[in-house]
Image (cartoon, rainbow, N blue to C red; front, side, top):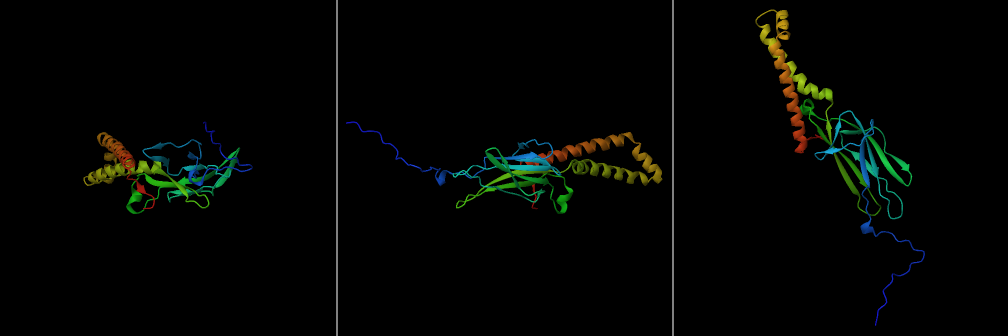
Length: 222
């Protein structure tokens, strides 16, 4: 005796949705782009790298919920990323996304303000569905000091210190004008200054990348 195959019950006029346990609230995609060039920033060593003073845009594309609507994401940032506008929604075709513009800043206090090392920052994207726990995504960023600050920390400090040290030694044995002339016309000394400055720049750059690869970045809350 053959048994006829079971057929699913017919539901007239009923709309079938995904069960709540399978409904995802995480956004489809989170993009961080440079506001000036529009290029998407890439990630290296678990961080997205941004120069201080640059403006970035955070674009969050949410998923469509079971009833066909979109849940607006909530975008927050740590202290090193300063919002320069309120989040706004963009409707594009069948979808929509939320955009927030942020300015990268190096927040350091105390002695850390004198050290041009990258600062760790975060962007928090939270999508909440009524009656369910919210889904939060943390995007880590490394904010590098500006080129002027980096060069001053690596080149300026070393050059000024070497010149003042040499000038202080020469001025003890002669007139002030003679000390100035002897300091800036000594070719061997100037070559030593240039080599020392370049070595200091490479050393600081190595320390910056070492802090990135080891995850020992200065926190923006510190």
